[in-house]
Length: 338
Image (tube, rainbow, N blue to C red; front, side, top):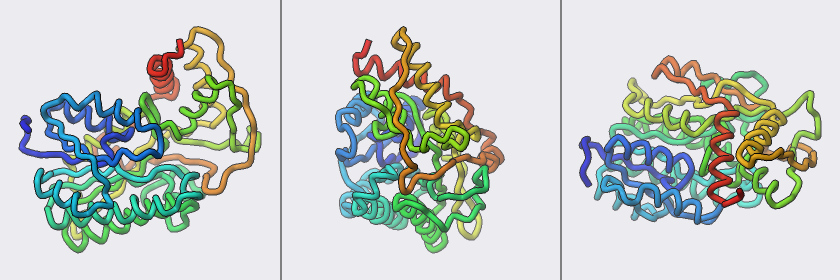
């Protein structure tokens, strides 16, 4: 592998949504990237493989199909490629899925992340960046959510595993002086996104002539709020933080990466209908069913981005209209819906 930099970047979850976009962006900057992913079937594996196809021809890219739970294999990757920067984006995602499949979360998000930390201990890195989640804020009523807020009341197992990741990283930073930065992502969306996310599922249901389920009891006055963050904004935030290593007695920090502009769920759905109308050249309206909020869901997510801005002079800014238009344009082309 050759690049303009001596540094090798290891991206776990490289076939995932955020991992793919970060990998692509780093390769455009002539950085050597090792992409690791287990290509599990939590959602359509074809989409994951199509993401990989966009980068696999690049001479600065190597793909390793492996699971973080396989500690021996992970140690081999660290020993062979000696990454300077590790961005851990591999995880079992999804809040509702954790209600029926808790084991997947313990294995991937706890055991797998511990293996990453231990690999960074035995093969020292310049910086470990890892995915946390806005879900750690649980049902906090105070908004916007700030990194200093109390986060000891998670309302889903997924959130518990992400909070655990932050604690584990803090401990390893303290014991072994590993510079580590945790990123609390807020509802990431965009082209080639995760099919289990609401905006993607709503679009699927439209073309299948099915109703979409909206978990707000039909209460428009007290609708759910979400801080939707466009994928390019997420990648920009990560890239700006990579060279900013935490310092001090415990070199560990946590940042929100969100849009700092929460949208009512119904407004978001309206924007999605509008974007899909533009993509198809005809009026689109979803069939809607209203149901109670699901266990593990939270009423609102709302990121304070002050700490991120103070650290790297950046805050996400893409509007939902702009971001959803790019998503629906991609969807219509990718699934040949014209």
